[in-house]
Amino acid sequence: MAKKSFTLMVIPDHDAPVKRYTIQRSWLVQVGMGLMLVAGLGAGASIHYLQVAADASENRILREENLTLRSQLKSVRERIEHIGSTLDRVERFDQKLRAVTLLSDPQRNLAMGPTEPETGTTAPATDTQFTQLTTTDTPKMMLGRLDRLSAEATRQELSLQDLQAYFQDQKSLLASTPSVWPARGWVTSDFGQRLDPYTADRVTHAGLDIAAPHGKEVTAPSDGTVVFAGLEGGYGNVLVIDHGYGIKTRYGHLSKILVKAGDRVKRGASIAAVGNTGRSTGPHLHYEVRVNGVPQNPRKFILEE
Image 1: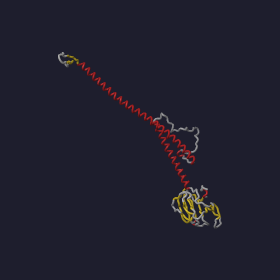
Image 2: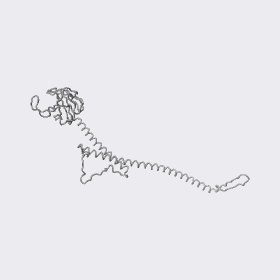
Image 3: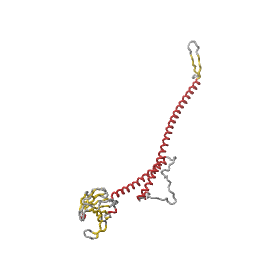
Image 4: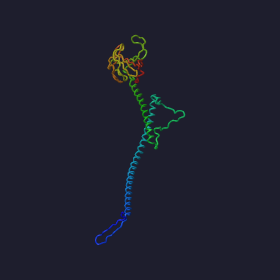
């Protein structure tokens, strides 16, 4: 049988008697188990402490990230409000421009001008669906608003492109309208009916006759392209400029032509000189304006006195 106890002998130095201690095995087992339990508890406490410390550190990081996200969400919310307000102003400005230019676009619901609310409805408040944000908006809600803002911005871009094209066309039209005198002098024969100086018959005069010294400069009254430069029967040396939009100007009896067919000319550019070529009673410029081939009174186009 295994021993149930152990004897511990303590032998001191010199002549002191030897001391004996009897230790029960069960007690040793209990002490060992107690130490193991204490060691286990200590290890568990250490692991738990490390986990708590790690969780605390992670929680601190999460709190910081949460604060950062809150700040970012606030910034996004403010930017959405700003963009929405800007789009509102652009929309109102677009409406004013379309009202001024008489433009409308029913397909995109852009018929502009002062509008009245439909029967049974009230006028919209100053704040639109794009600026009605609250502090409780979720990221999903803000993403939805951002999608609507994106769609509205795309629509506004298309609308403004239409306006840009319109104004560009108007700019081109204004640049192409013969709005200044091609030469300074005395109008000796106006547009309309007159007596032919050679036959005394009543005929239609398709332009203006501007008397001026021989060789006086003739300038382009607007932008255009030279489409003819040469002799043409009784008009002598003739120059024809196409200004686009169906508008052409003709210059007759020239002593000199300074441009050739295909040349682009700008308003005010020197293009010819007053002469007496062809069937003419003296140095003058015969000036015509034709719209889609039909002679028009040049005075209707001239803006300067």
